[in-house]
Length: 260
Image 1 (cartoon, rainbow, N blue to C red):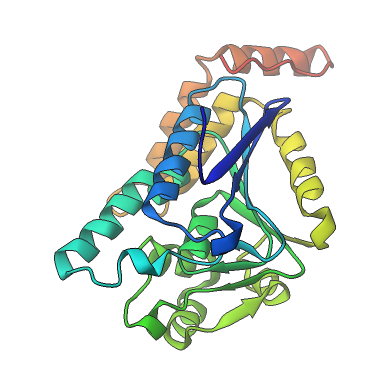
Image 2: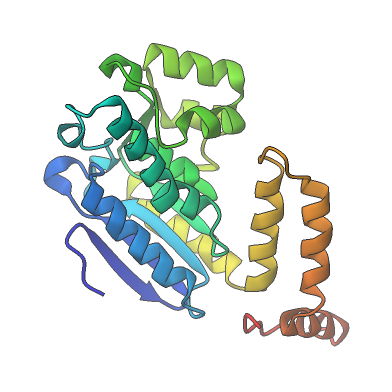
Protein backbone atom coordinates (compact mmCIF):
# COMPACT_ATOMS: atom_id res chain seq x y z
CA UNK A 1 0.00 0.00 0.00
CA UNK A 2 1.14 3.55 -0.71
CA UNK A 3 0.68 6.47 1.67
CA UNK A 4 1.28 10.22 1.56
CA UNK A 5 1.67 10.95 5.26
CA UNK A 6 3.20 7.81 6.76
CA UNK A 7 5.94 5.31 6.02
CA UNK A 8 5.57 1.59 6.71
CA UNK A 9 8.48 -0.84 6.86
CA UNK A 10 8.31 -4.51 7.84
CA UNK A 11 11.09 -6.95 8.61
CA UNK A 12 11.30 -10.17 10.62
CA UNK A 13 7.78 -9.99 12.09
CA UNK A 14 8.23 -6.35 13.20
CA UNK A 15 6.56 -3.44 11.38
CA UNK A 16 7.51 0.20 11.90
CA UNK A 17 5.02 2.96 11.10
CA UNK A 18 6.57 6.41 10.86
CA UNK A 19 4.33 9.47 10.74
CA UNK A 20 6.01 11.51 8.04
CA UNK A 21 4.87 15.15 8.05
CA UNK A 22 8.09 16.82 9.27
CA UNK A 23 7.16 20.32 8.05
CA UNK A 24 4.03 20.09 10.24
CA UNK A 25 5.87 18.42 13.15
CA UNK A 26 3.92 15.28 12.19
CA UNK A 27 0.60 16.85 13.25
CA UNK A 28 -2.45 14.63 12.87
CA UNK A 29 -4.94 15.67 10.22
CA UNK A 30 -7.89 13.67 8.91
CA UNK A 31 -5.87 12.19 6.06
CA UNK A 32 -3.10 11.01 8.38
CA UNK A 33 -5.58 9.48 10.83
CA UNK A 34 -7.20 7.58 7.95
CA UNK A 35 -3.84 6.37 6.64
CA UNK A 36 -2.80 5.25 10.11
CA UNK A 37 -6.07 3.34 10.46
CA UNK A 38 -5.55 1.67 7.09
CA UNK A 39 -1.97 0.70 7.97
CA UNK A 40 -2.87 -0.66 11.40
CA UNK A 41 -5.81 -2.60 9.95
CA UNK A 42 -3.57 -4.16 7.31
CA UNK A 43 -0.91 -5.11 9.86
CA UNK A 44 -3.50 -6.49 12.29
CA UNK A 45 -4.59 -8.91 9.57
CA UNK A 46 -1.04 -9.78 8.51
CA UNK A 47 -0.01 -12.99 10.29
CA UNK A 48 3.63 -12.19 9.59
CA UNK A 49 3.40 -9.04 11.71
CA UNK A 50 3.73 -9.69 15.44
CA UNK A 51 4.70 -6.22 16.75
CA UNK A 52 4.15 -2.69 15.46
CA UNK A 53 6.48 0.17 16.40
CA UNK A 54 4.96 3.64 15.97
CA UNK A 55 7.18 6.71 15.73
CA UNK A 56 7.51 10.13 14.09
CA UNK A 57 9.94 11.29 11.43
CA UNK A 58 12.81 13.59 12.33
CA UNK A 59 14.18 14.48 15.74
CA UNK A 60 11.76 17.24 16.75
CA UNK A 61 8.44 15.49 17.10
CA UNK A 62 6.63 12.20 17.53
CA UNK A 63 3.38 14.06 16.87
CA UNK A 64 3.14 17.69 17.94
CA UNK A 65 -0.66 17.61 18.09
CA UNK A 66 -3.71 17.74 15.86
CA UNK A 67 -3.85 19.95 12.77
CA UNK A 68 -5.73 22.86 14.36
CA UNK A 69 -6.42 24.55 11.02
CA UNK A 70 -8.74 21.69 10.10
CA UNK A 71 -11.20 22.24 12.94
CA UNK A 72 -10.77 25.84 14.11
CA UNK A 73 -14.20 26.81 12.76
CA UNK A 74 -16.13 23.63 13.60
CA UNK A 75 -19.59 23.72 15.19
CA UNK A 76 -20.53 21.83 18.36
CA UNK A 77 -21.86 18.93 16.32
CA UNK A 78 -18.84 18.87 14.01
CA UNK A 79 -16.47 18.91 17.00
CA UNK A 80 -18.21 15.97 18.64
CA UNK A 81 -18.19 14.05 15.36
CA UNK A 82 -14.48 14.77 14.90
CA UNK A 83 -13.70 13.21 18.28
CA UNK A 84 -16.02 10.25 17.73
CA UNK A 85 -14.60 9.46 14.30
CA UNK A 86 -10.99 9.81 15.45
CA UNK A 87 -11.47 7.59 18.47
CA UNK A 88 -13.18 4.88 16.43
CA UNK A 89 -10.78 4.97 13.47
CA UNK A 90 -7.49 5.22 15.31
CA UNK A 91 -7.18 5.64 19.06
CA UNK A 92 -9.62 2.96 20.27
CA UNK A 93 -8.65 0.80 17.31
CA UNK A 94 -4.97 0.81 18.29
CA UNK A 95 -5.69 0.18 21.96
CA UNK A 96 -7.77 -2.90 21.13
CA UNK A 97 -5.48 -4.42 18.53
CA UNK A 98 -4.39 -8.01 19.12
CA UNK A 99 -0.96 -7.11 17.74
CA UNK A 100 1.19 -5.26 20.29
CA UNK A 101 1.85 -1.59 19.46
CA UNK A 102 4.84 0.20 21.01
CA UNK A 103 5.08 3.99 20.75
CA UNK A 104 8.66 5.21 20.30
CA UNK A 105 8.41 8.87 21.32
CA UNK A 106 11.00 11.21 19.85
CA UNK A 107 10.60 14.93 20.61
CA UNK A 108 7.18 16.51 21.14
CA UNK A 109 4.15 14.32 21.88
CA UNK A 110 1.46 16.89 22.52
CA UNK A 111 -2.33 16.84 22.38
CA UNK A 112 -3.41 14.25 19.86
CA UNK A 113 0.18 13.06 19.67
CA UNK A 114 0.28 12.10 23.33
CA UNK A 115 -3.21 10.65 23.01
CA UNK A 116 -1.95 8.48 20.15
CA UNK A 117 1.07 7.38 22.19
CA UNK A 118 -1.21 6.54 25.13
CA UNK A 119 -3.40 4.38 22.91
CA UNK A 120 -0.37 2.19 22.20
CA UNK A 121 0.15 -0.73 24.55
CA UNK A 122 3.22 0.88 26.09
CA UNK A 123 5.67 3.70 25.44
CA UNK A 124 9.41 4.26 25.17
CA UNK A 125 10.81 7.81 24.94
CA UNK A 126 14.07 9.47 24.02
CA UNK A 127 15.76 12.00 26.30
CA UNK A 128 14.52 14.96 24.25
CA UNK A 129 10.85 13.96 24.51
CA UNK A 130 8.29 16.46 25.80
CA UNK A 131 4.74 15.39 26.58
CA UNK A 132 1.54 17.19 27.43
CA UNK A 133 -2.14 17.83 26.74
CA UNK A 134 -2.34 21.60 26.10
CA UNK A 135 -5.90 21.64 24.72
CA UNK A 136 -7.42 23.86 27.42
CA UNK A 137 -5.06 26.65 26.31
CA UNK A 138 -7.01 26.57 23.04
CA UNK A 139 -10.42 26.58 24.71
CA UNK A 140 -11.11 22.88 24.21
CA UNK A 141 -10.33 19.60 26.00
CA UNK A 142 -8.51 16.45 24.88
CA UNK A 143 -10.94 14.69 22.55
CA UNK A 144 -9.11 11.57 21.47
CA UNK A 145 -9.26 9.73 24.79
CA UNK A 146 -6.79 11.86 26.74
CA UNK A 147 -9.07 12.54 29.69
CA UNK A 148 -9.56 8.78 30.09
CA UNK A 149 -6.18 7.23 29.35
CA UNK A 150 -3.95 9.76 31.13
CA UNK A 151 -5.57 9.16 34.57
CA UNK A 152 -5.39 5.40 33.97
CA UNK A 153 -1.65 5.68 33.38
CA UNK A 154 -0.51 8.29 35.91
CA UNK A 155 -3.39 8.69 38.36
CA UNK A 156 -6.28 11.14 38.64
CA UNK A 157 -4.52 13.92 40.53
CA UNK A 158 -1.51 14.19 38.22
CA UNK A 159 -3.75 13.95 35.16
CA UNK A 160 -5.98 16.73 36.48
CA UNK A 161 -2.98 18.97 37.03
CA UNK A 162 -1.40 18.32 33.64
CA UNK A 163 -4.65 18.86 31.75
CA UNK A 164 -5.74 21.95 33.71
CA UNK A 165 -2.34 23.66 33.53
CA UNK A 166 -1.73 22.64 29.89
CA UNK A 167 1.83 21.94 31.02
CA UNK A 168 4.52 19.93 29.27
CA UNK A 169 6.62 17.40 31.14
CA UNK A 170 10.03 16.09 30.17
CA UNK A 171 10.91 12.45 29.63
CA UNK A 172 12.36 11.97 33.11
CA UNK A 173 9.13 13.18 34.71
CA UNK A 174 7.10 11.00 32.36
CA UNK A 175 9.18 8.01 33.46
CA UNK A 176 8.68 8.86 37.13
CA UNK A 177 4.92 9.19 36.55
CA UNK A 178 4.71 5.82 34.78
CA UNK A 179 3.65 7.40 31.50
CA UNK A 180 6.57 5.75 29.71
CA UNK A 181 8.26 2.42 30.43
CA UNK A 182 11.80 3.29 29.36
CA UNK A 183 13.92 6.41 28.78
CA UNK A 184 16.83 6.13 26.34
CA UNK A 185 19.25 8.30 24.41
CA UNK A 186 17.76 9.75 21.25
CA UNK A 187 20.12 7.86 18.96
CA UNK A 188 19.22 4.59 20.68
CA UNK A 189 15.42 4.96 20.60
CA UNK A 190 14.53 2.73 17.67
CA UNK A 191 17.23 0.16 18.36
CA UNK A 192 16.12 -0.15 21.99
CA UNK A 193 12.44 -0.35 21.00
CA UNK A 194 13.29 -2.99 18.45
CA UNK A 195 15.12 -4.99 21.14
CA UNK A 196 11.91 -5.06 23.20
CA UNK A 197 9.94 -6.09 20.11
CA UNK A 198 12.41 -8.92 19.53
CA UNK A 199 11.59 -10.29 22.97
CA UNK A 200 7.86 -10.11 22.25
CA UNK A 201 8.00 -11.97 18.92
CA UNK A 202 9.54 -15.01 20.64
CA UNK A 203 6.22 -15.59 22.42
CA UNK A 204 2.85 -16.91 21.26
CA UNK A 205 1.00 -14.27 19.16
CA UNK A 206 -2.50 -15.52 19.97
CA UNK A 207 -1.75 -15.63 23.68
CA UNK A 208 -0.41 -12.06 23.55
CA UNK A 209 -3.58 -10.93 21.80
CA UNK A 210 -5.73 -12.56 24.48
CA UNK A 211 -3.60 -10.98 27.21
CA UNK A 212 -4.13 -7.52 25.67
CA UNK A 213 -7.87 -8.15 25.59
CA UNK A 214 -7.96 -9.26 29.22
CA UNK A 215 -5.86 -6.34 30.48
CA UNK A 216 -7.96 -3.79 28.59
CA UNK A 217 -11.15 -5.29 30.00
CA UNK A 218 -10.21 -4.05 33.47
CA UNK A 219 -10.55 -0.46 32.26
CA UNK A 220 -13.92 -0.79 30.49
CA UNK A 221 -17.15 0.10 32.25
CA UNK A 222 -19.59 -2.77 32.53
CA UNK A 223 -16.93 -5.38 31.77
CA UNK A 224 -15.73 -7.91 34.30
CA UNK A 225 -12.00 -8.23 33.70
CA UNK A 226 -11.75 -11.47 35.65
CA UNK A 227 -14.44 -13.10 33.51
CA UNK A 228 -12.69 -11.87 30.37
CA UNK A 229 -9.44 -13.35 31.63
CA UNK A 230 -11.05 -16.72 32.34
CA UNK A 231 -12.54 -16.92 28.84
CA UNK A 232 -9.31 -15.75 27.22
CA UNK A 233 -7.34 -18.28 29.25
CA UNK A 234 -9.64 -21.04 28.05
CA UNK A 235 -9.36 -20.00 24.40
CA UNK A 236 -5.62 -20.42 24.54
CA UNK A 237 -6.07 -24.14 25.20
CA UNK A 238 -7.60 -24.55 21.75
CA UNK A 239 -4.59 -23.19 19.88
CA UNK A 240 -1.68 -24.95 18.20
CA UNK A 241 0.62 -22.48 19.94
CA UNK A 242 -0.50 -23.80 23.34
CA UNK A 243 0.30 -27.34 22.27
CA UNK A 244 3.66 -26.22 20.91
CA UNK A 245 4.52 -24.13 23.97
CA UNK A 246 3.70 -26.82 26.52
CA UNK A 247 5.34 -29.55 24.44
CA UNK A 248 8.50 -27.47 23.99
CA UNK A 249 8.63 -26.82 27.73
CA UNK A 250 8.32 -30.51 28.54
CA UNK A 251 10.90 -31.39 25.90
CA UNK A 252 13.22 -28.68 27.17
CA UNK A 253 13.54 -26.87 23.84
CA UNK A 254 12.60 -23.47 22.45
CA UNK A 255 9.04 -23.18 21.16
CA UNK A 256 8.36 -22.39 17.51
CA UNK A 257 5.12 -20.41 17.56
CA UNK A 258 3.15 -20.01 14.34
CA UNK A 259 0.22 -17.92 15.51
CA UNK A 260 -2.29 -20.74 15.08
